Image (cartoon, rainbow, N blue to C red; front, side):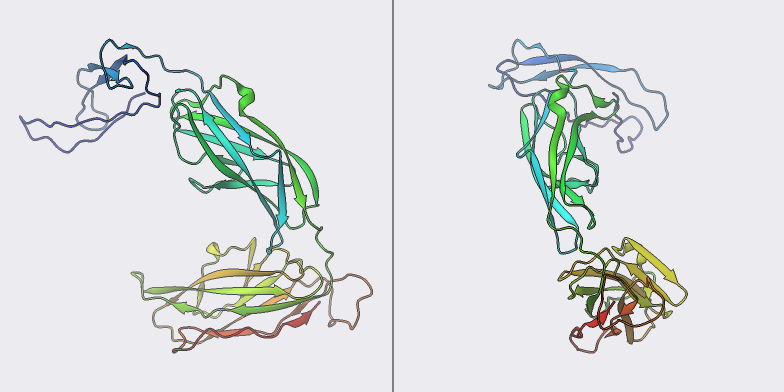
Length: 368
């Protein structure tokens, strides 16, 4: 593999001295080592022909620092990686947002010195998603890099694999599988000496009660003040508000909706809203949230922007349940589970309040 490095300009009839650093992933040995085949050349710009190649050898110091009598270094051509789990079962527990979440501790070891710039692990199970690692190198799901980058020979790392299931997942045990791969830029996946060491097979226990049936419920809503920051380079200001919805009833709110009216002043940044679905209407924009269990609450932060000339003023937000039947208000009693449209009273707050504190939440209203 050839690497290019750009230098600063060199004046006519002058020279430039620089160092090139290399890194080896092999462990230090009691004896010095040597490998031939290195070469270097220079070109005047991208696409220009190379000069004559100059050859060089690479020396590896021994554990005592000696370079005498080096032996020929032979790098592994196959990976010697392995992955193990601290437990053969992962338990997913229902969270306040109604979804199931869980984790398991994994240990990855690399016993060879084959070239690698990252190791990655994937995992899957029916109805469950692998959603990342902790710690994390970069946000990922389904397939994630092992945190920490390249492995030295004999290095071992421990981290957590994170799993998630939707709110309506059926409780029970499902079988999961996973796989570890060693990768090297330019060649893709590095072959493994013992493939069985790279495979995972384990159970995932979705623990807890099933989603209660949809029925009568009570929703409450509260919001922090929406305060805009200073004017940016584009002449606009950005700000955010956090809206909290609470299900104080005894049945699941299947699809809570948070609605903002379109007022022509506060421009929504709906692309950043953490909503599974956003619907836009001529006079309003709706965030369709995930199911909310009885007693649960959910806080969602919404970003907005406004032109600097827009004065402070009230905006409104409300929470509702989708309409599944036509007409009518909540009956006094429900002989069987059902859902109908309903809403909590509108909630208002101020933009750039003049020294005021965030308004308190209101009493929840019955919805069905």
